[in-house]
Structures are given as structure tokens and as C-alpha cells.
Length: 408
Image (cartoon, rainbow, N blue to C red; front, side, top):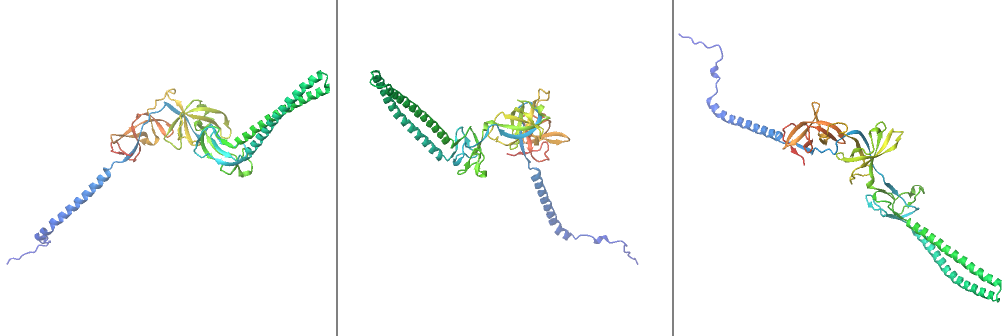
């Protein structure tokens, strides 16, 4: 009799998959897994190309040609001021009946700006003319009487010579002639006096018309119709002393205060680069006109006046301005300036100044050597030439060779 022994370990023969179940489930599950993986791959590739294929947008400027080969000796700030600025007032006290000046109006010399009430002046003028006419009429009467008195004197002389009339009668005729001559001279003087009063009345009438003393721009309108104006302060706050303020726009210049410890660096005729606060990217060539020969004890400064080499309508009175007093770079033996670029175009990498250029739609990095600042610009001594396209606005992570789009 043979005894069959059961193995002590687990029976692995029971661990098998039914072939029918494997044939039913495996193909569909594989297709689902493949489809899911493919969809994830497509989404990943789309995201990658969407973010990595997009070109960053940048702003560019052209490196400018420096207008002069000069370096900055001194910086200062001040304001645009006119040499000719006048607050127009009337010569007399009167009520405003018309105002023709408005802010921003360009006026010519002698152009009418306002009119005052002239009724009193017209009455005085008419009265003076009437007095003149009366005096002129009396002259004609006196001339007739004088002619008659002279004939009477001639007859008296003949009769007295013939012994018919007395010497006394001759003297009376002579006195009558002389008296009429004196009265005629007085009447003529009275006519001259009334003519003078007529001229005074005409001047008073003309003073009721306020005119521009020079050609310029009206920057302030200070009086309205119906208000009283006077050349002196009168009547408290109810009387105006000015009608309008005019500025000669051809006389605009820059006025700055320079510390007296640095005034030795400034010379008349010295070149200056000016930058208006309103237009920080606009460098305006200018020149020192004069140094006021006195110092401000409180501020320890000396006033310097600078003339623009060329005026522009954008330059307005009382604008803030920053100036750089320039020195001849060649005279100082310094390197010539290759180009001027905005200061914001310069970046720092490893302690060195670099700029990014755009060539054929791709970024190029360039190490540059910088000089002095000129307002909002900086001088480039080496590494860049005028006319090259420099990036001034764009992402911080720009890299050489990267394709970019230029903002319009």
C-alpha cells in the first residue's frame, strides 16, 4: 500500500489567471492606458510650447550720437524763467469795461488788452475843446478892433501934425492900439493853454485803454469786467493792481543756484546740457549767459543764468529743470564718447555694466564702458556705437540668442 504525502508549503498551482478572463480584460485596459498617456503627453507638449515658444516683448531705442565731446563737471537744478515778464496795469484808477486778454493768447506789441470807463475823460476833453473854440473866437474880434485902432492912430497923428488934434488925443489912440495888442497876445496864450488841456484830456482818454508793452504770451488774467483797477494798492482787497501778466517767450532762460564752493567750475559761455522735469529723455543744449556777481548769504549759493541755444514751444516758464555743466573732454585727455543711451538700458552682471541689443530679432549681450551721466542718459565710452538698437524695457531674464518681439 502506497501512502501519498502532501507538501508542507503553499500550493502555487492554484495561483493562475483564467485564460478567458485575461482575454476579456487586457486589450481594453491597455487601450485606455495608452489613450490616457497620449492625452497627457499632448497636453504637456502644448503647455511647453505655449510658454516656451512665446517671444518676450521688449522696447528698444537707438543709441544716440553725442552732440559734443564733453564731460559733466557739475550738476544743478533750477527753473525756467523769462528775462522779460510784466504784469500789465493801468496808469489811472478806473473801472474795467472790457478785457480782451486770455491765458495762452499770443499778443503783439501795443495790442489792446483791456479798456476802462472813459466817460469822465471824454467830458473833460469836450470841455477843453470848447474853451479853445471860445478863445479862438475872441482872437478874431480883437484883431478887428486892433486894425480899427491902428487906423484911428494914423488919423490922430496926421491931425496932430496939422495942429487940429491935441497931443493927449494922440496918446489915447496910441494907448488903445497897445491895449488891443496885449489883449490879442493874451487871447493867443489862452488858446495855447486850452490846447495843452486838450492834450492832457486826450492822454487821460488814451490811458483808459491798456495795451501790451511788448510781444509775448499771456500767462495770467488778473482782472474781470466791472472790477476797479489802480496802479497803486487802494481800497483793500476790492481794487486790482494788475490786469494781465505777459511773458516774452523769446527771452526764456534757466536760473540755477550753484553752491559757492563749486562756482569756480562755472564760466560764462560754458556749454550746458539741460533736462526738463516734464521731458526727462530730452536733452536741451544750452550755454552759461552770466554769473550774477553776488552770493546768497543764507544759502551760500551764487545765481547763474543759462540761455537755451534753441527755444522750443514745449519750454514753458517756471518749469523745473536739471542742468549739467560740461567740460571739453578732449582738453581733459579723456576718451571720446561713442554713444548716448538711457540709463535704464544698463544692467549689472558680475559687477560689470552690460546692455542687451536686438539683432535680426534676437537678443545680444554686450559689455560696455560707461562715462558720465547727462541728465537721464549715460555716456558709452566703449562697447557700443551710435545707431545700434538697445533694449530699454523687457523681462529681467533675457538671455543671449533669445528671440524677442519689439513693442511698437
